[in-house]
View 1 (cartoon, one colour):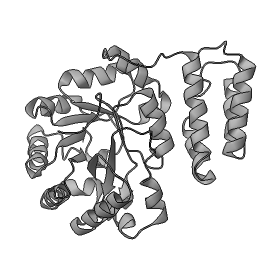
View 2 (view 1 turned 90 degrees about the vertical axis):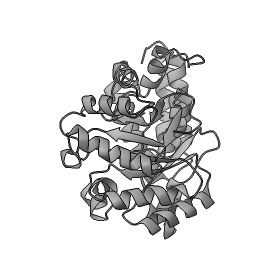
View 3 (view 1 turned 120 degrees about the horizontal axis):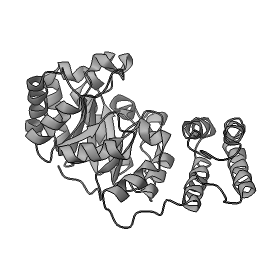
Length: 319
């Protein structure tokens, strides 16, 4: 594995979420690396406006993985080449994990698990562009030998890192990620495996690290509590970790609101609502405040309300 991340806590790719304002916020919290949302290689190749928006990289971001999906090698390669004309990325990622019917119907995402020759060719071709290639994948089954064979195929094809989500495609997000399998694979393939799936707490991250995973991807857990990043880095013993004070939290969200004002309104408000459960958590009138922000009508008005509520509370709360 090769990349320039400073620590093993990484922001996972999340559709309609990991755009630059969200990534920038998590870099401020301390993640060592982030992913773009999963982007269609065909949409990039076709110069789709929406796809190009997803490629924007803010100057204050850290190491960034471009997460692509496709069911066609040539389209994947063309999309990656076009993307690299728009922005520089540290890693090229192939999504072989998404279980959505729409993505799988295109031959991309988790459908590639059932097409090992195609998956192998994708990794090999993407490597010709000169950047590390990472694969995010699910497991083909709960049979350890199947998983080992699959991961070894990806590694022998040139994958520099395999982010393993230990659910099968048919499981969706039901049940629990099979941590025993991740432990076995991480120990069988040192320095190759990162973990994703069911990461909600500091202890979840620590468990994966102790298994031998070189990285842990934060997804749904980070939406519920972004400050799990700060708490985890402190538990891992990293220096220069942000002081998780009320003032720090206030300023993190204040910057987030300011960044949201720089993107399209129809994207900004849905992004804000994703994080409302953790804004003003455990403070007086929290439900009322979150409802006011959600129904502000515009991100500019929501930003104004945020400052009003912060001033009213006089920094006397803990959240």
